[in-house]
Image (tube, rainbow, N blue to C red; front, side, top):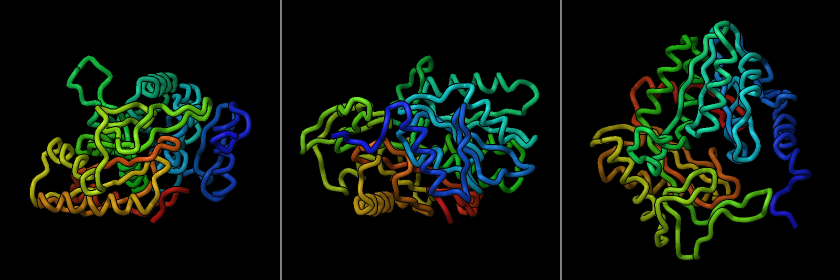
Length: 331
């Protein structure tokens, strides 16, 4: 028996976004050939936000299309970048003349294809790009390397940029706010069990019951090392310490804390994890001014979680608080 509820392999992603549209017909519309998702009711006279990437990370990005966030999301096959033509057509469809900002996680295929799409759009479109590279586990210091991976900080980037665009900010300002969020954010994650490839049925790696993999990626990559499992408090502390050090957080600083499940982590577990993240930060006098716990940037059926910290300013907090209505995030 298949581990995934699906029909043919080639229709997996397309049928999934058709289901998203069926569940939220007032919010999203699926476009076919090439495949992308837009708001059901197009926005007028505002900067258009376009994101995307390989599938398997849902509700990212298709579930974040709507008022206060994305205008379009472009899904690729599982763990595979969408094509440049998909991105180009999505951007063309939602561009109202106020400019387009492309929000891209830092993976070679994604960055390459979004850049090609920007070139294909040409001088007729005012196009800008924000590359999200928040994963500390891949911080090698090699300036010639691919750089850090993009992970759950993309959620904060899409929310802040979406709020700014909704409020009428120009494209350059929306871009700069996105880059500011990236510069003020860092993420680390761990797994109790690896994800299973829906095409092969094979886990990306194996762990013993008393082990965790520290520093995992969202495509089933192993992390920086296998460690002994611990309590929720111990696991949260192990993730928080490097983030605090990297961001240079000090007593009295305020942060947004996102505890993100990887797909098979129960809300009870994520609630405990957020509690322990708050307790760990409180020991340093760092204030969790905004918090979110849930599965937003997933890795198929991986069991585990990541912690993202974003050092807040008053403006970033205000933009985070602004109204949003999407299939996956609403307030």
